[in-house]
Image (cartoon, chains in turn red, blue):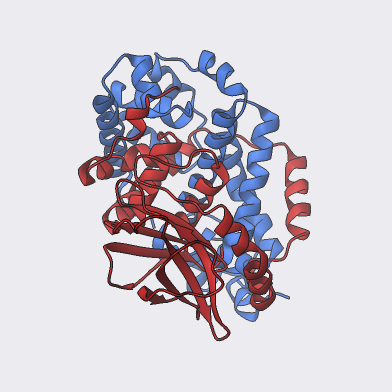
Length: 238
Length: 211
């Protein structure tokens, strides 16, 4: 609705963010605020708990408008799921190999770099992907061993994706970037490069997540290097 | 391919004259349909029969909500199909400790419907159709389902008209709280507060034992 730029750059305090839980629960935030709130949500257990409670209320609202769908819709849905394999039956190895080979290149190229207030709105799919991870029923937050600022990592095994959020990160000098790596027995693979913006915050969607990998972050002279050259600033076992 | 454990949960005699054993009485409590949690367990193992039952129980909520928000039967069907595909794909990750099946599916459905309507051309048409007044008339028209009816109606009755109005416009109208504020010519902070207070009140009115 043509919000002025100053509006988009509006940096919210924590209180403001907590305040948005109910509006978020009824999906009444615009894209920018939604993404900002989700970045906050990743690191705020209180808000996640509050949302879980509010969603019982919104589900009751949903029931009040129930309408029986046309019977042929069920046939279409059943046909569609018959054409799919349930996620836990897809061999993880083949999924990850292909995802790492190609998916991470794509992620590195279009890394979702988000600062609170000024958010990526040109890629609704990415916003949705971040939300999907944070709202996934199996979303898990991992403990990060970190030397820098505040950083959190939440992932969903069923989605094979994770959301990294950093706050109060030092701005790397010049054009240097932070790079996330996923490390398995064969070594590290780049999982996304980013620079924190004005609020020192960043949210990065990481693909190809599965238990057993290690997530690490380094500072690098440029994005997309084949191997890390900087020292490990944080790491976590997934 | 169904796993043994899934079969066990489903082994409650159905349509048999004899009284079910005590464990099945507990499982089936107020209704004769399988509990959603156990359906999810089976769906996670790829049990399409369980998925079919889940669809039967939840599709009217999903479709009705989508229809209310997107205001197009074709788009509501599309939303419904996408939501159930998502349920099928993510079933193995569902954890009942983190919230009910119903809440999870309602959240998926609402998000999808709102995203569709905000990104489609019909967003403009929709703005003309959403009533900015008379919220209580909607309460009377609501087709509330069986067991839930009295509970939800009483809970909605505990909201003030102003609280109901903003929740109605945001949740069913798919409007952002900024749009609600503009339409009602009310300060943003007031709208945010009304949504929060209204949902909180609704939650506590519905609060007793949600399982």
